[in-house]
Image (cartoon, protein in one colour):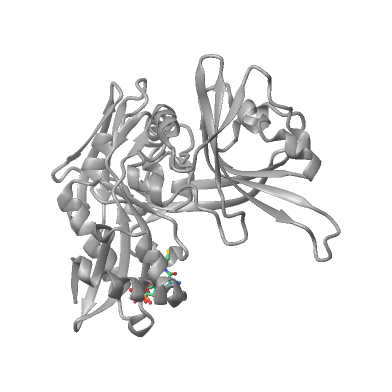
Amino acid sequence: MTYRRIGADEQAAAMAALSLGFGAPGEAGNWSARTDVEQLRVVEVDGRFASVLRVSRMGQYWLGRLVPSAQVLALATSLEHRALGHGLALLEGLLGELHEAGVPTVTLQPSTARFYRSVGFEFSGAWSIYEVACEHVPALDRSYRARRLPPGETGPVVELYDRVAPGRHGALARDERWWRQTLARARQHEDKEPVTLLLEGPDGPVGWAMLAFSVDTGPDHEYLRLRVRVQDWGCLPGHDLALLGALAGYRSMEGVVVWSGPDPDPTLFLLPNQSVRLARRHYWMLRLVDLAGAFGARPFPPCAAGRVVLRVEDSTCPWNSGIWTLEVEGGEGRMERAGDQAAAVRAGPRGLAALFTGFTGPDELAGARLLDGLAVADLEFLRAAFASPKPFTAELY
Ligand SMILES: CC(C)(COP(=O)(O)OP(=O)(O)OC[C@H]1O[C@@H](n2cnc3c(N)ncnc32)[C@H](O)[C@@H]1OP(=O)(O)O)[C@@H](O)C(=O)NCCC(=O)NCCS
């Protein structure tokens, strides 16, 4: 069994295995056209690709600071090789590669938590999908102008995103490939032409929304409802309502706007009543590849100070195992080997992952037995050190 990258001449075989793994063998060609070969990793058994994954290497912003990270975008084991440990071997191979490359975290959207938990991933953030009927949205203020960008022109949007992203705890530092491959792609039932809208105020661009439209007419065309799916959006502080207001005119078509936003979404505070509805919530997982690297790289609240001694057991990434001191002071954290100091607090990579992002506090993790042996002083220190906005990554991947 070998974990490795592949060459361009092997891409078709890898995509055939991946698409069959996902039950969509007919999509191999389409998926291949949207994939760069350097993103693919395989586990090879007797000259055949048993398990395949696709990975990207974008950093993530934590409290405004960019920390290197990776994202598993797809992973599947070919039908003929299932339940033989190849999927897990592929993930272990990736974790080893990322460790060597100095990438301290990796995230993914799981379809089966048990599989990923067995190698140390844990739920560490959420995607919240909201809906609002256009009738509840005030019309666009006339001091703004909404302008459609020509297809393929993302320049002003990328510029705005780069200003907005550091303020989103958990946002990805999107690369060019991400804009090209992942965003602004209509789904099967949607109008083929996605639209990018740039919102301009008196002093220049303040926001954008990438839109995909679909119409629901009911079984006998008895009604018409427009669904506007915001594939991606962002705005400078204070302009959220204007961005939504650009779509208010669809109220005559019973328009409904759907988007992925933070929890709680700022529009909750801007609209009368509870007209914004939480439609769905999905959770993403994170794996701490390198404890010392991850906790040493993210910033901490400047007023938090203290230390805790942890005994960590991590059988998948044994370089994380042992006794560690996590010390926080002046906005910085240090995770250092603590020799043979006594450690009452026991942790594994799963509990530490959910703590790292600020998704869950130490109290909930203690309740779930993902952190054990915390004294009152440890709880107080960890609550202060990991206080943050809830992580918010807009795009599902
Ligand atoms: C999920 C998938 C990748 C697992 O691959 P695999 O090579 O068969 O998995 P492994 O043999 O390495 O499994 C290792 C462990 O995970 C568990 N596991 C595997 N698939 C699982 C599933 N769908 N749900 C829950 N647990 C699962 C196995 O039971 C095994 O645990 P065990 O040793 O305690 O029994 C494979 O079933 C697949 O490709 N499914 C369809 C595509 C998919 O869902 N991909 C994941 C997208 S996020």
